[in-house]
Image 1 (tube, rainbow, N blue to C red):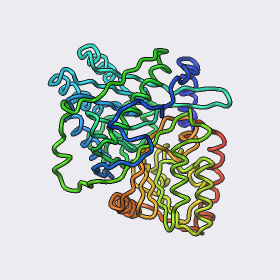
Image 2 (cartoon, one colour):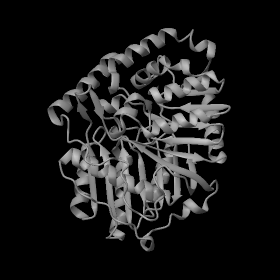
Image 3 (cartoon, rainbow, N blue to C red):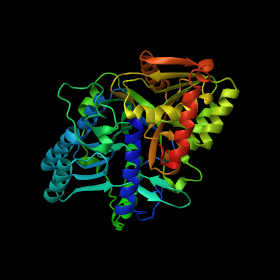
Image 4 (cartoon, rainbow, N blue to C red):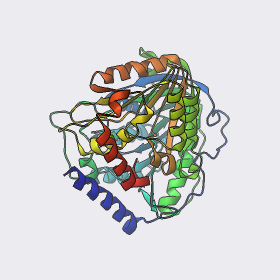
Length: 448
């Protein structure tokens, strides 16, 4: 049954691309092109920020709501997967802020996959009622040359008033933005919705600092690309922020557990970088610099050649490399099998693996820590598709406090996991690795 559902989903998406939006419009602007802004640190350079770490999907959504509730000047949201009641709650908050601050400008980039009819009606209503509200719904773009590729916007990022930001792995959907399943959980008939679990285990960071301006610049580059690809129009929607009109999210600054003066840099990638992906290069560089330990947690573990080679060299140097991924059981959803089998094919790159098992929960984190000092967190799946085809973003954080929080959360995840040591990786899961290779070969660049 799982195989039939997965096959139907792939056929549906390819058919939709061919008959609705085949090949799209090509890019006119690189994701990492520079928009001049004096307050923005250069893309890929470190700056000081205040940070909070959220290793809980529900908490991440509440922080996004808190930031939006402080907005007075601008809101930029690339939600990737969004829809349902949680998303409409976010739209309601935006509407409230726009009613209080008529000059507040909102720009949203949303994938079509999980949007419901009510969501689209609400978006249209806001667009009609508020002249500064703009949204863009993106489809996957399929190309046939040089091979069958599926390109999409996978960036998950919120920027408020050019000073606050939230980014990481969480979408805004009642399944993705919760860790526990409520008794009255709603169900719908969307095929994509049936393929995902009822709850997600995820990680985000929430921050304040000039790095938000760098993210904001890249958001408008991203918006311009996808506006052209979806509509054929090319408009420059970028506008400067006004610090005098910026709001203040008091709860961010006054609550406990705030990490002050952390060093963070922002890195982006897209199909334009197919030959040399900046995020892959960043992860490979950190892997090469590792002295003792690397921890990797991701929905996917099918790294491209750059990261693959770096991990092989690190393992040869006796670096301890731990992986944390979805496991499978008789109660697992289709999504677990879709990701777990290809992941197992690459376990030879690791020394330890923890396969996470919680009923009806998808392990969706996208985090790497290196030597308990560096942390990578963002939207980037460790898969060939993310490296070759998708728009992605990460933050690299040089701060032992952040790395410790991330590692503590991973230690907690390990308690709900099966621990596979180096010897068990090549014995117990040998057949799974063979099946994983078959899945990778069958889906090619359409996978992850």
